[in-house]
Amino acid sequence: MVVGDASQHIELLVIGGGSGGYVAAIRAAQLGKKVLLVEKSELGGVCLNCGCIPSKALISAAHRYEHMRNPGISGLKATDVEIDFAQIQHWKQSEVVNRLKSGIHSLMKKNKITVFKGEALFINEQEARVYNEQESLRYQFDHCIVAVGSRPIELKAFPYGNRILSSTEALSLTEIPKRMVVIGGGYIGIELGQMYAKFGTKVTILEGSPSILPGFESEISRIVRKNLDSLGVTVYTNAMSQSAQQSTDEIAVTFTVDQAEQQVTADYVLVTVGRRPNTDGELGLDRIGVKIGDRGLVEVDQQGRTSIPHIYAIGDIIPGPALAHKASYEGKVVAEAIAGQPSAFDYQAIPAVVFSDPEIASVGLSEPEAKEKGYDIMVGKFPFAANARALSLSASEGFAKLVGNKETGLILGGQIVGTNASDLIPEIALAIEMGTTMEDLALTIHAHPTLGELSAEAAEVALGYPIHI
Image (cartoon, rainbow, N blue to C red; front, side, top):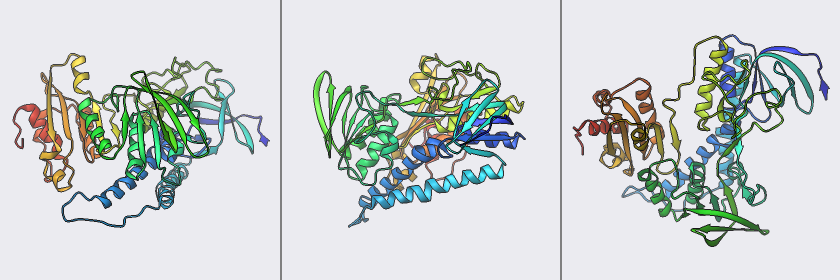
């Protein structure tokens, strides 16, 4: 190993090259900063390499397979539809993940960002050592952005390895399991469980809460539950996973439902019970005095500054939802703050999307949240079944719902459950950001026939003059 003891100077050190880190590096470089980005694994981080992107690729493949077998349109029928799962995995990696990763590498070169593949260790508040097996270098920095992300939570009774998988391993299987137990009925468990069920896996979901997708209103999660039932997925709620016994070719999970003990056997167990911030590793944040809260989250101000003013933190290691688009947004804000601009975090409209079937998307306040905050609300809900485009797509399940302030007419939030919900939610997010009223949205001319009309129709319902229902 080559060790450099003399400190080199860098204006900005970015630790972590995921959705937050690489975006922060690019924005800072655009603003004239000399940037060193340290990433121990692969650029793009968890989202690109073993999270958001590969999961959505496999989910898309599962949807295509289901539609080929059951087009849902009278007069269309397909026979002898086959799956080559190893080839699907190859497509996911080569045509999706690797192409996007290559694009990030090109952006690093374009913006003259130095990328170091390795790890970082704080020596003191102004210096860090970056190292790998070949070399170890010392850098003095003016500013630092920490964007080291998170990892799946491991349950003591279900340690990862062999037939117990985290989401990372579940996305890399080369064969479709015959049976799978999913511990956790949140968005990751539902997405991956439903995906494997569409490929033919017999899936059992164990969720500790009274319903799947806790955090979403029951009228939304109920629609997804109905689809899970149609796929033959067995769902246990109020279920507490207790232990697992592995053999050469299967694993038995013991769990309780309302204190009654049960057991289910599968090829694999997928544990999806949340993520833990990577602030407890060898980085040394605690050593230099960066203030970290009880849940391992770094405390920051509205511009991402930690308790050490020239060290910033973004993404999954600070409070708020662990979402890739939140991290990217924070990366841009922090880079601009370092450059002296008055940018600050504004979390009024962070969309959340579940790529279930049907999809779920939400932004702003839900109806219960708006009531809890004391608003006198107006609500408009419009069904996909009354939308011409949805019917032509044979996708009539679901609805779009808007929540507004009755006094001002301002849109406070929106929820959509139905096909392409992920693509429809940005309009509502923009409406909240721009201070749009229900009347503004209702009077905006939407192309016909499109799914986009759902938001305008929901606004008309809220205003009391619906046309199509």
